Length: 45
Image (cartoon, rainbow, N blue to C red; front, side):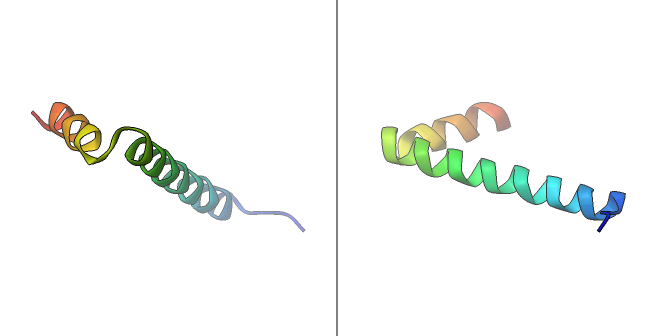
């Protein structure tokens, strides 16, 4: 069974979103919500 490049690209994007979600929850658990708010503010401003 071979995967097409679109399927591979979709799985790659889903993996990146999943990894970002896991990292966000880990940072939330370690440092509380203030850390994530400060991180988002620093990237947006």
